[in-house]
Length: 279
Image (cartoon, rainbow, N blue to C red; front, side):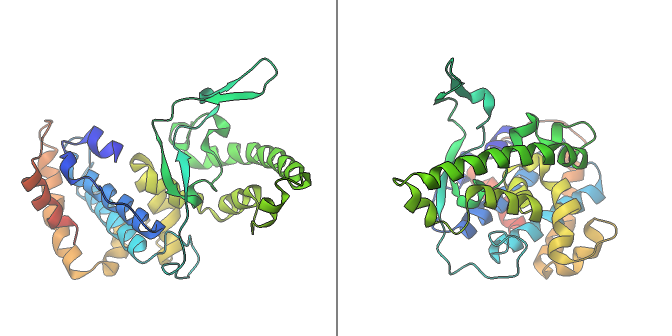
């Protein structure tokens, strides 16, 4: 949502304002925002017509996965739409530089809460990106080298976390709460990393990372082999309405690329434009 307003002239009157009762609804809202940002970002949105189709198809398929409840369930083929969703306080910006410690290395405070919000609990079960102090998109040579460097740091972090969980279980005051958990936090983080379900949430939250993660890591897991890792093999998955909306969308993005300007959308015009792509 922040990127939608930062990089486009989108009107705030059309931002989501309702409460969400399930994680499926939350994922669907994020998927819609990805498509909205691509639609309304006038400058630097696409490289060429194939890039425009790649980005359009990826977002329509991601919206489909969200509406079908398949983002909430990860890569497992199960329907979670009737299961209870839980939300936890989650901070996009929680990292070592925002944690205050005293001379004895005890945590005394956490600052910079402006990016904290109630999110599906699985966001909190993903391994923290900041173990390398740089996110994947800023790592030299990209995601694969980042993951190779990250994994041993994650193992160190999980061993420390497991030690703390052992101490908690030994405390009679809170052992009951730990016993009620089907999996501990360390187990959930390890599962998220090994299954790569963390990539689903990372792509859902970060528009700048979405396209690379979708085509390189998510597409084949959900839809099967795609040797070219692009839109060509996935056109058959689109609805007729989505296909009919694609070429006018591509033409619009190519025309926008001819002139770098800031376009400010009013409510009515933005709503009409959204209706053309949210099919």
